[in-house]
Image 1: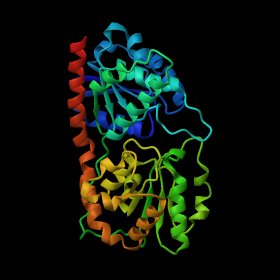
Image 2: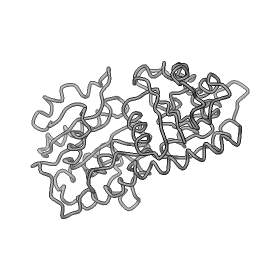
Image 3: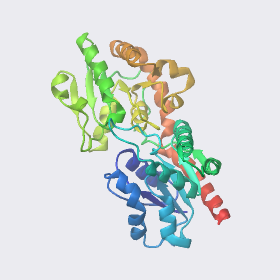
Image 4: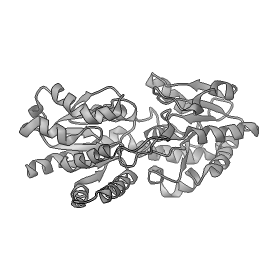
Amino acid sequence: MKILFLEPFYGGSHKAVADGFARYSRHQVDILSLAPRFWKWRMRGSALAFVRQVKDVRAYDLVLATDMVDVTDFKALAGPACPPVALYFHENQLSYPLEPGEKRDFHLGFTNIISALAADGVFFNSQFHKADFFSAAKRLIRKMPDLRPGWVLDEIRDKTLVLYPGIDPAPEPCGVPEAQPNALDRPLVIWNHRWEYDKNPKAFFTALDRLKHRGIAFYLAVMGERYDTVPQDFKGLEQRFDGELLVYGYQEQAEDYRTWLAKGSVVISTAIQENFGISVMEAVAHGCMPLLPNRLSYPELIPGPLKTDVIYRDDADLETRLEHVLVAPESYREKAALLSAHAAGFSWDHMAKKWDKFLHQTLRSGRSRN
């Protein structure tokens, strides 16, 4: 099978997923991409750009587009020769949290709804995201003054599945309790998320501030991608954590990034928006103990017996749990090893097989409708 992968925002987790699937799929996957900027304009215009870039859409068996592609535009412009189209949702514009003062553009949310209706198969990156999308779409449709197309959601739901993204596998299976301890003389706290408001950096750095002022020792690695607008919470960190900060900034080389993850003791998320959590699962696969909020996609990613060790209730609970990990990291080593083995199940060498299977099903169902 030949797959055309359309990614209009080729950066961060979007780029990681496109590259990972193309690398590990048993099928031929050709990526067409656009630079990761001007996301609203990508939703408006990426279909036009991609149609011009595709030399011969008939050469492909399936098109796999992500959520910033207007599938209706692409299919209409590609014409009758367009093969079946699968739509993968990293996020959606119906429920994505807004920055302070920002007003939601419901046209973009409707683009997501109509694209899902036009697609031959629809995939979400978590159960949470799937439920969140349908709940928000139902609310939007109810806002319509008349002609409310509730039937649209039933049609979309019938062709929708959850398909977790993959992660790059850790080079070695991560530790057992008897493994060599961290080479650093203090536990290393990992931040490997985007430097944006929806990752809630204020809560993260506030917890570290409070522990530092109480004399709790730790090191800090602040990684992740940054964009043009950086939240104020990241400014002045080099002075604020002058004795703790070992790395500050995006790691261009994947090997450098993995090296820091392998040195880490704990990875924390304080996010208010997360539909899967690739960066968290990468750190867990490398042996970091995760501390995650009781919201979003996180509860479904952690095995039941370990949820009570990983999932925190609120900011105060995070601070308490983090102190325990930093004071006695060795007591969490066995749990971190179990979680590392669990996270390995999300590696692309496993997940690509599921992607191949479900995309092939989309191909067959799309052909049967045509």
